[in-house]
Length: 200
Image (cartoon, rainbow, N blue to C red; front, side, top):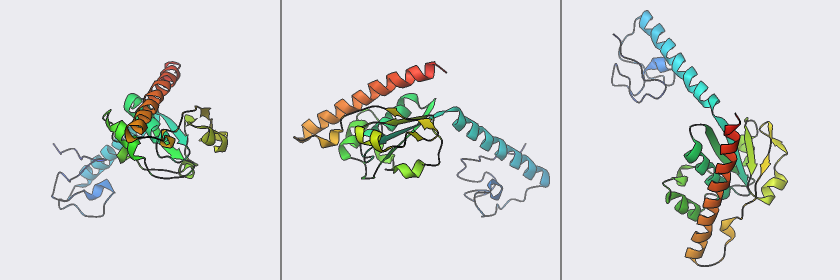
């Protein structure tokens, strides 16, 4: 019985020492094992089924885009919280009117929940202008004012949170504001998406 090819997430070919088998179509490096025509057909069919299943799983999830001014704290925190709490039903991404990189305090307070915000990239609104979304949510007044009314094919939702990066004071005072904002985001977004998903 032939071994199942590990596409689409393979690291090594199961028939040889190559990192990927040529039948995966992702690498041109040839497999050292010669496959019969029947084996090649079976592998192509298996790979196609795996790809189709992967696409279907992605389509089953609703997509949400969060927008703030500079994509440094509010929107990355919101997207990470939604993916953490609703990742089986929602796929969330974040963006900004401009990009200024992730705020270190945002990374720190999310790490307190076991969420690794530093793995996210900072993005600009134009990066997503051709992508479809089920929810587009602005998180501050400036983003609400400057985001197109319809983006991603849906009307945007407006929520207004205080930007904790504008807090003045000691490091502990700033961290306290970031924690408050994190918890407020989690509460309000949690209530919103629980209600939305219950209606489906």
